[in-house]
Image 1 (tube, rainbow, N blue to C red):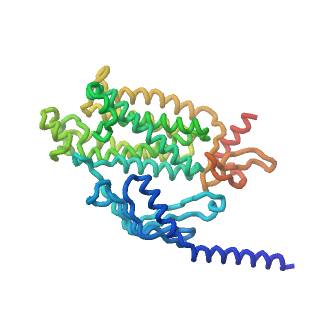
Image 2: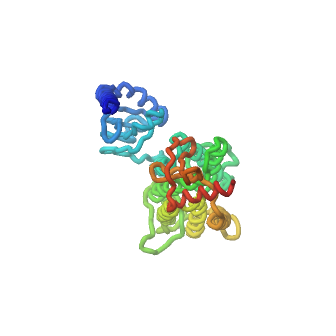
Length: 419
């Protein structure tokens, strides 16, 4: 009897037709004022948007036309201009009241690199965006919810700002003891990269612990990859500005800053610096990018959660220990600078942690690689099956657990061990 099949087919056609009619007639532009208002509140800058539209490109694509984010001061160039952009939204998750954006594409973007009152290039915001974007991509693939990803990122940024300023103040207390109010004048400059790392780690871990975020080691791995990319991006501005001072050199790649607003030029005029100098910050920039590549390789090989994070601690510690011998920072103990002492401590902590993680049988990991194969392995009536979900991620249908899938096997070992 084909009647039930015909009925089902007719219903499916009606549903698809209804969806097509909704997509064709739905006026998404009515949400434009609300979107502009939220963007202005989030960025603290005037935002203009000509039009919103909805199209179909393998999913529901929300298109933005004529997006302009103005600079803080009127009469200056906009911070960002985009002729058009679209965000591709998967329809399936919408039925579960979740927004899953698979890709965002910009057409003809123009980004203004901002400068401070002294004319120095300020890439701090861009560095934060780069780090958070990389972490968000990896976090989504690992099955973390969007809210969890950006909440952890926010806690990390806030902790990083506090830590960066706090360690700088401790290192240069003589500059602040007469006027404690200057401690909070972050816009005048003065931060410590290691302070940012320590403060960011504490902020992110604190949020994850309080909210009971599953698989914190996996989140730490992702944060390390995003963090080193953000650090490399921020160093671009340091190289351009000449904000850090290094030993003089006669090597062909020695740098000399001649801009009247460059800190290196001012130091030379005061007789405190001899140029050309080693591009020590450029060395660190190249090292950061090399570490980023190594961390990605370690992470993608499916090593145990936590190994990528401690590898970051060890590799960056080694990099900063070496580069700081060329920098003219203050000596604090045994001929070493503050960053070098922290580097040695972090390397001493990271190396045994890596050895321990690699030699200890892994426990079950609540791991979900969205769309990339089976997840947590558990034994069931029909053999091992795998389920996904981190931080409240959407549940996935059980799938057969491939014996070749190392992550799934590790989960099964951990589950069996607890029994």
